[in-house]
Length: 124
Image (cartoon, rainbow, N blue to C red; front, side, top):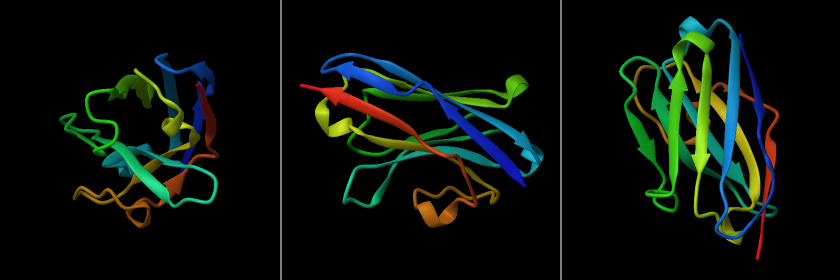
């Protein structure tokens, strides 16, 4: 099992920035990718970004490219999501997820482990 705990959500004005953190514990050696997804009320859970633990390759959803940056600190078993130029459409619960398969995936079904989520609210 892998346990994930997110932190760093909150309320920010349009154009502002936030940094989310996700601390992983447990069988982290079985994790190949760590990702972020988000879900707004009444909508599906959408892919935001993912990073490969070994090598650090990154992938982003189209709506956040150029604004969000995913990074990791292997020594701390922690993944970060730096979010800049936020707008009200970014308002959602953000979830950290871990994938125990070597190949890349941007689908929620491809991730076996999930955190509890952290709320991000962007005011206009």
